[in-house]
Length: 109
Image 1 (cartoon, rainbow, N blue to C red):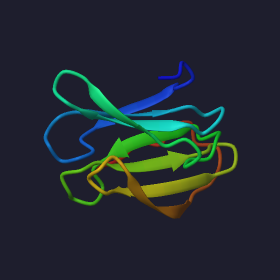
Image 2 (tube, rainbow, N blue to C red):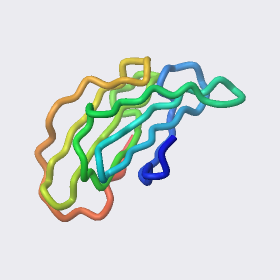
Image 3 (cartoon, rainbow, N blue to C red):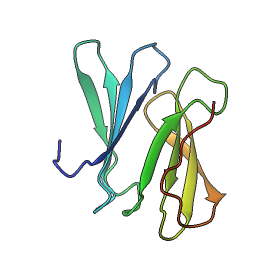
């Protein structure tokens, strides 16, 4: 994995009860999801799928499912997305309409 992954969060991405991980590099937009095997992670790279410069990448359980969902937010441009977890480490995204300048975006469950 690249040393540029500076935004990291954990949650259950596939509903198996184990903690998985998402990694994000804000300089180039590269991301990876790691599904837990119990002793390590199986990573899927999502290079070119996410835009660069997000300042917040947070997993949470917004939809009531057993799989984590994702919020992406850029504090400078107010660009935000909500991704409903598919259960595979991928997300179906829709735009969010937020204001710029938030330091932190934290899920409320």
